[in-house]
Length: 153
Image: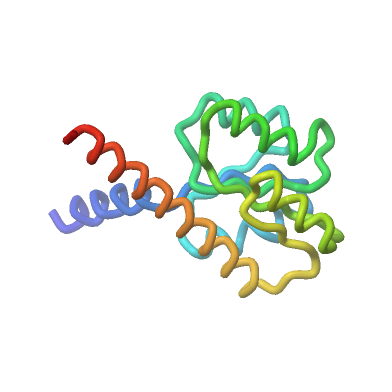
């Protein structure tokens, strides 16, 4: 009986864990994956823009997308446009080898949550990811409350 409860609890926890999609190069992914999974987050990954679009089209919403600034078959801007056109409100963090104020401003103006550039410390990455996940949670919470209020009127 105890193992059934344990199994049931782990199923509940896995459903509650934030879902993160990495659209990153294998090198960057190998550095971020242990950090993100170590926090208990449900992390999936794809190698490029087209694979990311296919995954986002076929799957339920993700809580966060982390995308390379440079993809072999598209750009982070293309992915933001896809999300906007699909009506998805998932937060996105752009990851860049070299980031400057101009790229950071462009990332924010296009609708991404933030820019992480190298080198970044694990604590800084975790802080930005947690903040983006909090923002996504609040966005969904606010949207659900607005729908409930609209239904009452």
